[in-house]
Image 1 (cartoon, rainbow, N blue to C red):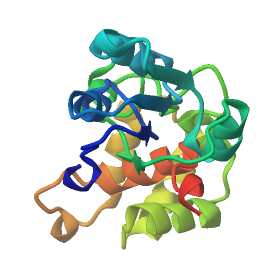
Image 2: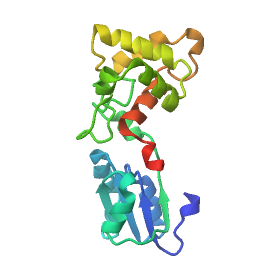
Image 3: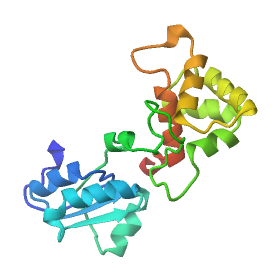
Image 4: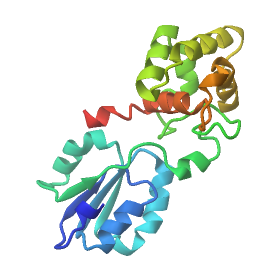
Length: 206
């Protein structure tokens, strides 16, 4: 954020506005206009409250920052002075009930940033092949035990649907060799990988 201090105003983009923390800092530093993107409608509610003092200068959009170019074109914005993107899941989303991002409690295995559209994590786990599941856990989670985990998930789904965060976390923990348990929960990397895949989080950076 230190590189984005708008000393003389300017137009800024918050690609993942969330609860509005970064956007608020930009406005307090002197930005004259800001467009904030987020796929999570609940996040936009919080951002609207946080940025109420600048309601005439801030536009909050229920949109994916992958659509940035077309959104700017539609609004007649030819140039911007800076942009910030805080990728991943927020503490607000982790704490949200029925979101399915956290393995700390048992709830529906959703993981969608925008719960109004797209396939859930449970849908993914139901339909994906073992090979593809192992590949995405390795690619997006950097989990070296990805094949063991994928095999355990597929073996379980043959017996019963995997529909909750508690189920998935338990499967991953059982699949991991005890020597693979580190300071973080063994399910952390698998949950990260599936969340990234469900939301196609890295596509917008290509």
